[in-house]
Image (cartoon, rainbow over all chains, first blue to last red; front, side):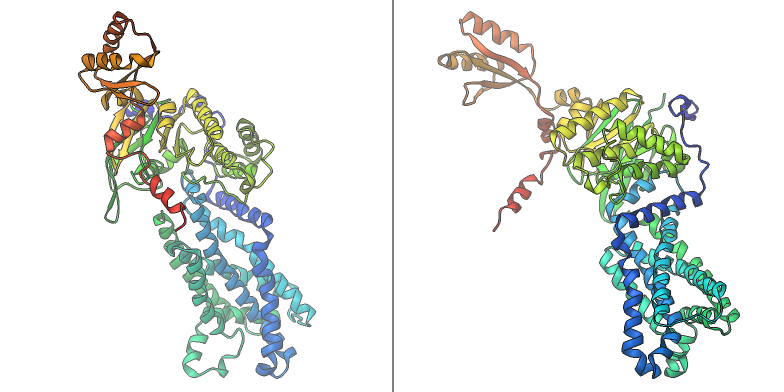
Amino acid sequence: MTTLTERPAPPRRPDAPQRRTSGLQQSLTLAWRNVVKIRHQPEALADVTFQPIVFVVLFVFVLGGAIAGDWRDYLTYLVPGIMVQGLVIAAGGIGVALNNDIAKGVFDRFRSLPIARSAPLVGAVFADVVRYLVSTGILLAFTACLGFRPTEGVAAAALAVVVAIAFAMCVSWVFVWIGLVVRSAGSVQGIGFLVMFPLTFGSTAFVQADTLPGWLQGFTENNPVTHLVDVVRGLLLGGPVAEPLAWTAGWAALLLVVFVPLAMRAYRRRV
Amino acid sequence: MENTIEATGLELSYGDTRALAGVDLSAPAGTVLGVLGPNGAGKTTAVRVLATLLRADGGSARICGHDVAAEPDRVRELIGLTGQYASVDEDLTGRQNLVMIGRLLGLPRPAAHARATELLARFSLTDAGGRSAKTYSGGMRRRLDLAASLVNRPRVLFLDEPTTGLDPRSRTEVWDTVRGLVDDGTTVLLTTQYLEEADELADDIVVFDEGTVVARGTSDELKHRTGAQTLTVRPRDRADLPQVLAVLEQVSGAVPATDTRGTSSVPVPDAALLGAVLDRLTTQGIAVSELAVRLPSLDDVFFALTGHGAQPEAPTETRQEIPA
């Protein structure tokens, strides 16, 4: 009885899709969707555009003198840290965006299509590379105007950006998960900041670890943000790179192993 | 021959709430199954189970012979879904929405654009294709949503309240589209709160209430099964009204009611009584301007089946609108 209807009726579906597309291709299509949305709404980039400038002004000119004695010296120390902080905060935006998307019902359509389950989430993570590039580009351009100069050459600087963005893509899975398990976009943002502030301020991004109380040093020295800041600092200004890079890669792998499955499970459950 | 849509004993609970308490559904190829019921009756939940968005706690469902739980990807290739809340991407243009879906389904870029062009033309959206969907009117959005669910030429289409909130003209447009799809052989499952819509489109109707099917059949069968028919007479001369009332009472054995226009009506078990009434009125020389037997509306049927109207929350909303 079943065999009669087993085959799809070929005459009615002459140019029916032939399931040749991979999950990667589907993710890229959905990443394209997110990038097109940015083009329709450029104000979605306002946070990553102005935040680096505001933070540099705040830290360099308001706090720089007190922290380092001279704002110029502090600028040099600060750029790698603020680049990483900007990326971690930019990564947090994905949670809010996904939460909104799901509330609007677009994801129901994706879920009813014969595509990889992970494609909408992976696509959103890919699309955020645009936000990361804007954040880092603005930061480097603005600090260059203030006199910041990388010392290790263009290739090393480019590598620093690539490593930092790759790490941000891994961190964003934490926020993907938060965005899916928390009900409203407003609380996603609140929880996001609770995660981001201890990680970015409790690192060597803004101050050297030896200025901190002992108990905090323990946290700071094992903080993934510290390792990443050390890599970026080494590639921009010179210093050891290999060891912090190994730590960063380890943290990135750990984030993916833990949070990608958590996010996928939350996505399947979210009605 | 197996039905295109076949569900047996579907059960699903959200916590303590039983959204589906053993639902059977079936629809042969190329027909429209209307699922009728008030808000919260379980219509949307049933659609989401059949469209592989939700997994039932109990029972099974097959689309074109494929189990929705065991072969969800196979089922997704065969279905199109238009949600209760139009699920197009507002920030994209109409064309971009359709191209995106074509690309996701594996069409090469030129083919995806060609399919988008074809669907925009079919739904009279060619001129609006380049505008972002958030600028569309309610009717245009619903048409785009329908177009989006047709990119993969589905054999089964789920329309979850496709005309809720639309003006009458847009509603008629959606109805015409649905009829066209069914003529092409598509099987449609349509949920609606509008009895008129089920009456217009559906070959078979199931009536949901509190997660169960309380009645099923064609529109006519449902009207026959519940609620008596009504015989109405209006004499040309109002002075004849007392004699008309007497005739109706003799023939039907029930007390007739009269409205302000002088029309008398009485419930009758059988349309054949019409002849007896006409005979007696003719014998007494009474001229009538109206004489008819009317089936109950689906509204009457719904009320008889569930004990409440189709939209029980409507009066509350009206009250809420009045400022305190």
